[in-house]
Image (cartoon, rainbow, N blue to C red; front, side):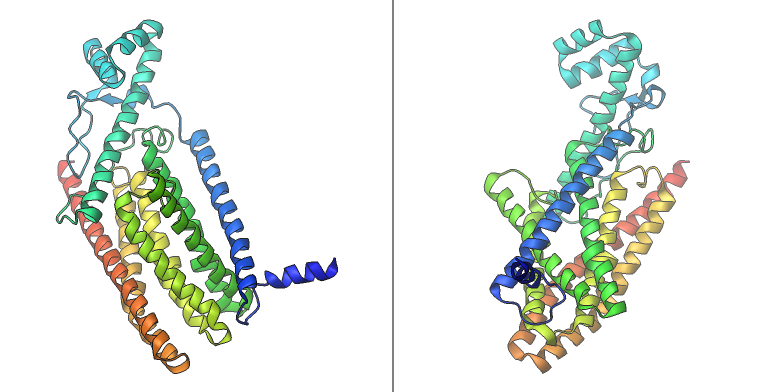
Length: 391
């Protein structure tokens, strides 16, 4: 029994520096797959519970509005606010909105069964959900126009002001947007662990355990996310970790495959891999930039958005843009040079050329990231100036 335990321990020893056998490599990957699938499941369940417990309070009737035009105008860019305060709405305006949302027969039945105050609360929550639906439609159209149709000069979709802050945030958020919000939280946790905590721990201690966990963890996560994208393509149902528009899936697969090649290469090279340099690459691409990108996405959906907290949103945009430029542009040039020179010196021209091509591919991703955050920061500043003029 002790020999079996020792054998299993050796198979999942992440501190080993030798080139792993197929069996050892597979054992470590399956171990990390189990860890990350379990972790992401716990994160998603916890987020849903937290949202239901804290962010799903009924929308205050005094803060609610309903639209006068149905369907409500939903042009690209900023939301068109609902213009009739619910407490001042006439019976005919309320009946018209309710009939539009649930149908005339069901609306009449609901009005006859519910009391006046209860009915106003139902209408308030219904208006909040309609507002979330309109934002989701604008967002998904923008993603499709940007990534699939490659259209230029698009107006970025901004969420409308949340009427009750975090208290009713989840009610004002449509189902697909909720999934993107939770997915962003899960991805941030993965990026922080594999792209920040483990690389920093290795750089500070030079303990191979942290490097091994980062490499195998990233490979396992890429395998998991890529597999779910493939399943989503086959079934036509979005079960991806990222919960992004299908127009983004090809880019995600290309990114994940490139990451897999680099990380598996680092594992198979063994002791001669430049571990410090690899950790700096993880920090530049994941821990210090991509994680902030997903924080931005969460803020865009939430009561910390431009409509509710413009100064906070602008400061976050500036910080994120500065990080993208520092690590994905300035420092990235040095990382490419050091990586390619190391490969040419120790592993030959074939591996050196492969690494160069993959890092140039990541450079294209970096350029897109920087352009996006530059435009987002500029647009946020412009919106703030427009809001001040209105005030």
